[in-house]
Amino acid sequence: MNNLTAKDVMNPKVLSVRDDMTLHELATFLTENEISGAPVLDGCGKLVGVVSLTDIALSEAERAAIEHEQSPSGLNPWKKRFNREDLSGLHLEESGLLVRDIMTPAAYTIPEALAVSEIAKTMVAGRLHRLLVTRDHHLVGIVTPFDLLNLLLQEE
Image 1: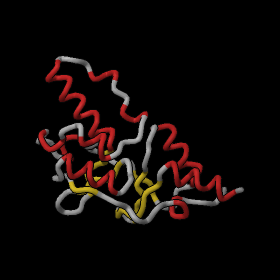
Image 2 (image 1 turned 60 degrees about the horizontal axis):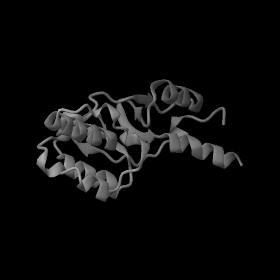
Image 3 (image 1 turned 180 degrees about the horizontal axis):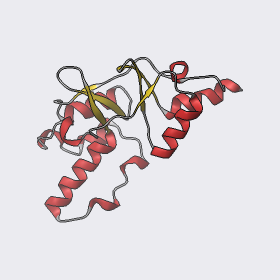
Image 4 (image 1 turned 120 degrees about the horizontal axis):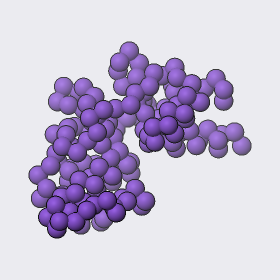
């Protein structure tokens, strides 16, 4: 396991979303693909950020808090897994927001040659749920905590 790199553990099938998708389209895409987040590409296919179900929930909580003059600070949407029914109650069609409005406008990328131990350190230090793997500045894969946990299962 000491010699493994991002290339060895990454998932080369990266599902991405467009920055001009509505929140309803985003929520549908994420839940149908059973993923919690995705890289965001602009109209030219350039990586411009990342977005997650937590971003959707927080954006809706902030909107509701403004409408009801409440603080969303008690919301912890990451403590449970979202499904289509949970998200349907958020009335995302009415928000008027796009992915670009709620995404994190930065993406953590790593080179495909980065050692697995460094990947784990980076994820823990940054509290990151996904790292995008690049080769010559092109997106070639994604590494999540599940990919690292799978290594432990392979050791058995």
